[in-house]
Amino acid sequence: MALRINDTVPDFKAQTSEGEISFHDWIGDSYAILFSHPKDFTPVCTTEFGAVAQLADEWKKRNTKVIGVSVDGVEDHKKWKGDIEKFAGTSAGFPIIADEGLAVSKAYDMLPAEAYLPDGRTPNDSATVRSVFIISPDKKLLLSMTYPMNVGRNFAEILRALDALQTAAGKGVATPANWTPGGDVVIPAAVSDEDAKAKFGEFTTHFPYLRTTKL
Image 1 (cartoon, one colour):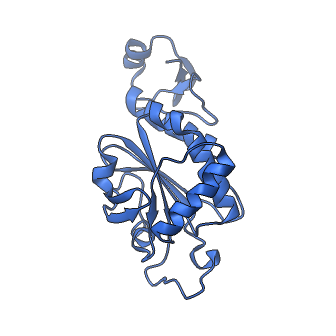
Image 2: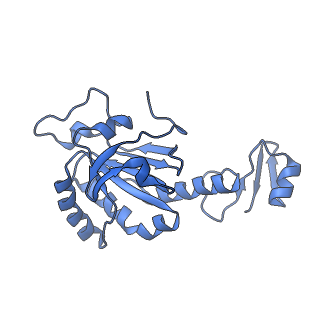
Image 3: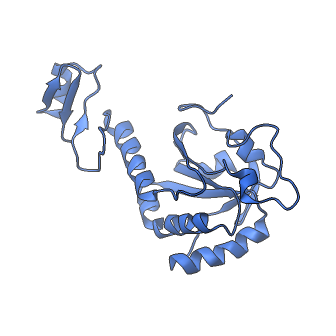
């Protein structure tokens, strides 16, 4: 069955470029972003790992840990990190999971249960391993997205989505289309006008079901 929003994400033990982890324990009390790749030493993925490395301070501000997963082994991961750091111009301090047996990729519904890696495999053999999962401190799946191999992921959007998720959870609101921090937010329909005024102060009623306010 597909992994759905608000499901508890699968726990697992795995070797990574930074040693063995138990995933739920590794998350601890943080948010987590698990981002997956079909193979090491691939061009688009190298740029993406670089983008993640460059955002290290932003992840830290948001109490968020980031971790990659690729179907190659630990030694390849360590060598690939050298290329990533050279391209990004900064260190890549996050771990990369070695998912050679596809256990993580299958548990997170990135590949069919019967999938396997043939000898001489290419990125096409694990092409759907191009996903992002944002996970809450209570180990629930908050957001997922999957990209094709020829379209680089926009980590500024992933950062924006993380901000939206944390704002929604922390303030009891929703965020509208194209929201960025500081923008107006949506008051949930279940909140009465009286309660909305007490909680948020002034707000704008566009329709009875759509009210916006500033935080």
